[in-house]
Length: 223
Image (cartoon, rainbow, N blue to C red):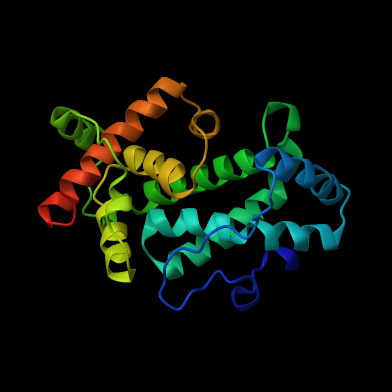
């Protein structure tokens, strides 16, 4: 499908530094206004409108790429996975139900599921232990960070260090921190994306922040 093949120079997905880009959409009035604008666009896509598909990809490329980059810490992998996400969206968009949540949340769920598939395919090549092996260690550390660790740092070098440190968290803690602190999603939305209770979302975020702060403290980047 032509519209699912992303032109990175046009959409801004391929940044020179390799850092994750921020979402393209920046509409005043909050998430409700964005959702109301997306509904007609999704309907046009379902009707087979080629221009609507192009708009959908253009508006959401950075959101998807940002998630993929944060999880993989690889520009090339993030680009490839972003392509895969939109191909999956093209094949499964008929399963989207606006009554069950916003398109933004549905897209985040599709992206997250693809990233899980990718992680499972490549985990034998990774040094990172499995989720099951890492969780007891992280839970044993206990405690919750009172502030977001990324707020204690600034600049490109600090951003790169933060990105590398995120990779040391277990996947379930990492995804919770990314969705909340970097994608700035609401707890309710994260619960929908991850298909877990809000209480579990908050617990994972707290443990993830605490683990991230502890790792950064070892590098003397937070106090």
